Image (cartoon, rainbow, N blue to C red; front, side, top):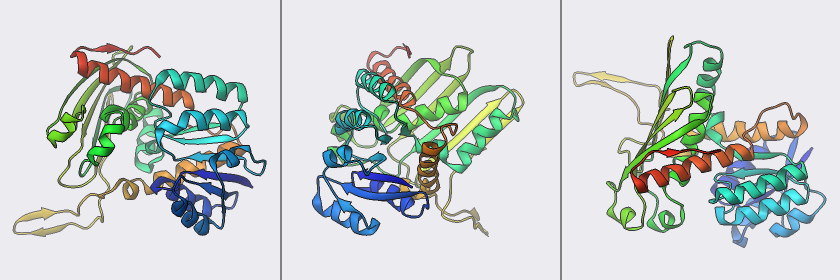
Length: 330
């Protein structure tokens, strides 16, 4: 039985606790949150106790921690947890600083603990199916990947100001997905962006509409499109074109029923929230983390994957600032 402590009892902590509650080989033993009411509520749901983060890291009855706290707390928590020999499941981004992540890689490797960077979209059944079929050679050699990610509406300006920007907060998932689908790291990135959804986002120093082009050493291309607004719901699509064909993962709709009238065909709306759209992915990623703790041959997104996505996000931000392509040095 893997004994787990949940650090952060907000939405994502609740999602992961829900998955763990349904597993036979893992158990939530304790939780922590800077808001006592949130910790108490989740503890009751999990039949767990409430401790401080420091207590959870130091105690001997915990094998692993799930870090769902604000990003600016990750560095200290990861360092302490690794040094205490705790396996780590960490929400993205690992840290806003690539240099900080490099320091943490040294600590994690010297401690020998398992580290899972929570790029949940790798575990979406449809996206995972695309990647599996790419590897199987069904479309030949990959030539161009297109990733579209659009939120129904922007987050509050208060969040925008502390998010690190659209590339580090939102597109970072797509950077990992690009590597996942391309099968190799890009060496160049070029970004454009505008504040078209809400002028206040631009005043806060960010953009809400962005596009990026990535190029690999072999010449493969990836195009990523992000928007903080999609009037029709949560838009999450991937298309991979290769020398022998194309694979495409479409949006997940609320239901699969179409209606046809004299006005034409009409389908259901897309899922309207990321927790709904990626419900299966969140469940599978946590199950994979727990399985990895017993069988290290099971592949997981590592802290190095977190670093590479962060370097790409930094490169995109620099490209947007300078108007020039940026070489990516991993």
